[in-house]
Each structure stands twice: as structure tokens, then as C-alpha cells.
Image (cartoon, helix red, strand yellow):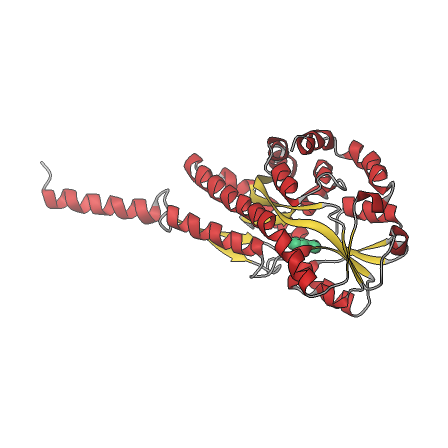
Length: 326
Ligand code: BEZ
């Protein structure tokens, strides 16, 4: 018969192995994104990390790397694919460069309001688009966020769409938006976010495609003769986990990460739905030269865009059905 002291020592040793050496090793995930620390996306990433640490009692934590510290979005996507990066919040633009079906989200005037944008992004059709991502590009998509609807800030006065013709107009680098502005007759100029302020201020570009939050908070409006409130496109973000990293997690670990990341991505959508009108009100208070337009402003550009992208992104029909039912 074994002595109690021996049994207790064996039990303690087993507990130590379980806690520090066995399957329950503490894990710090790295999550990258391009937005700066005060941005809604970055705050959501940090809140997700805090929730994960609390729920796993510190067994899983998240180190957030904002402001492109781990590279631009194309580089972060490669890191996710190789398993060198665990998680990222990336613009859907980056995913659409690899999986054209995602271009459907950028159909001009797919939605008319920020509430509708949020509802489309939370819909089953949108979520079903994430299913093939592990197979197609080696990442697992856990849900969408967004950054409001797109507007145009112009150094010159804009009265009609013809005033945009030939203008160097900053875009986020992805094809659906490039095609939109090519159809407008502008000269779309791909440029990452951090370069935009100086480029607009010093006239390197004549105009920029941007969301209301950043037009207000980063003071792009200071260089504008017209802020065109066009709401012409939504701008979704997607929460991703490396498929390699995901494959190494247990079912329970995946379930917790999935639930908490989705909660905070939904929170990002809800924030923009709640705040978009406030950003506009701030611009109005600051007496920024605002011109409000709708799809008629862009004449037949919208239907021309749909002709090309309807084929490249067949899910567009289903997204339209979702939007029409809202
Ligand atoms: C942009 O490229 O305009 C952008 C990227 C991320 C968040 C917001 C805006």
C-alpha cells in the first residue's frame, strides 16, 4: 500500500504537469491590424483579448499589434497563411484581392443606409462566404466588422460627377473600388491609410475615398472644398485566424475564440451604426463644405460596375436579395 505522502506528492506533480507542461500550456496569440490604437477596430481587438484572457483565466491571451506593426494587409495575410501570425482584423478588400466573390460587398449602393450595411454583414449569406476560406486561402473567418460607408473628400469643388473626371483620387488598394472610379473617369490612386493625410494636404492627390469617422477624426476635411456625402459603398472588415493555428486548437478552444471574436466584431458594426450620424453632425457643426448626393449622381456607373462584378462575384444576387428584404 502506498504512503499518503507519496500519493500527495504524485498528485501535486501531476497537477503541475497539467498546468504548465501538458495540453493546457498558456498561449499568447498575436493579432495584427492596420488601424491606429484609438480606432474602433483596435479597441475591439483589445476588448476581445481581454475577454479571452478572462474567460480562459489567463490560459489564452492576445497581444494586439496595431498601425501595421506586423506589415501591411497583404503581408499580414501571408503571415496568417504560413501560421507565423495567429489572428488579424483585415479589410475585406484584402480578401477580395484573393477571392473575387468578396467583391460583391462593394457593389455601389448595395445598401442605402449604415443600418442596412450592418444587417447585410451579419446575414447568413455574408457569413456563408467565409466557409471556403480555409480551403481557398488558408484562413478561418469568424465574422465581419465594418468602417461605415464611403464618402469622397475633394480639394476642389464638386458639383457633378464630371468634376471628378481626370482627378487623382486616393483609393484603398483593391479591384472593385478601382473599377468604380475608372468607370467614373477619375484616376484611382491606390494608397495605404497612413500616407493619405500628407498626400491630400500637399496635393499629391486631388481627392480621397474615405469613411466619415476618419474624415472627421483625422481632419481630412481641413483640405476640402467639398466633402461629398455619397454613402456609395460599404467598407467591411473581417476577423481572421490562421487555418494552421486553428487546426492546432481543441474544439473547446475554437468555440470560445469564435464566440468572443464574433461578439466584438458585431460590436464594431453596432458602433458604426450608432456613431455614423454623430460623425456627420460633427462635420456639419464645423461648417465643412458638404454636398449630399445619391446613386443618381453617378449616372450609369452603378449599372456598369454591376455588369462586370455580377459575373466575377456571383454572390451579389443573394446579397441583393438580403438587402431588398431589409
Ligand atoms: C482605408 O483604407 O480607407 C481604411 C482602412 C481601414 C480602416 C478604415 C479605412
